[in-house]
Image 1 (cartoon, rainbow, N blue to C red):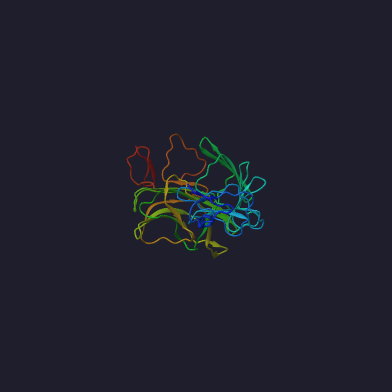
Image 2 (image 1 turned 90 degrees about the vertical axis):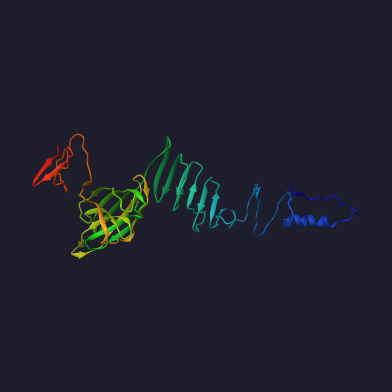
Length: 357
């Protein structure tokens, strides 16, 4: 237990001892632990710190700062980031206003124009604010750049509305016909699936979108890959996609083929908006390239290749248990040229298409 300041021995005609004076000095210099109790008002200029011990926390009860221009309270742990609670023109921190809103400012913005505001009615208004990894969501509304998105926790699952697929970056495909690397599984142990969407948005290039769903299994030179391709729009800026493994670095790449593109007879680099959605189950770990895409190398071994079909879908295998109805053309590419010995499989014998029995 901390010491108490004592008036024992202090009185008229009594002798003042040294400890009568030093106890106050020791208390205010924290030479020894003393409990200090005050009433009324205390004026303070300069830094004010409250420090706890290994077993006791430093505590503040009711605390008010009245300096209106830059007043704030800083809460800080040694060696850690701090939180400033402030008002008026304080550059950093949070402020609980008279309206019941908790305002946050970042990057030097004044908290009177906060980056984020949480209101007592559950509304969360965001302006350039990044939410961390963990959040508890009941029903929350996020307003950002004029758009409102609603999250709702329904039976442990998050339901939402108002979402928009946003591009992560752009890439440039040089104006030479070649295979270009758009994604990699960085290392033999990396595996899993991902979805890459590439779009032209108009202007020089007619609007189109290419969707690539890709998958890689274990190993530096894995035996199993999967591709599923979709094309929206009837342009031929990108015609094929493939998965290759480069023996020079044992890295597996996703590549796209682009023929030479000319606009008005002038060869032109292709600018693509990239939408990187790591939402195809397990993903460890795919990296989508940025900037100007690199071409393939002579040490790349083709593992799987599919063409894009204008306004259509390409898959490796399609199983139909009932019937196929089509009003257009059905194309079969890469049919085996001998009987596969699997009942129901198609194969080509000369100019004839046959069914294995």
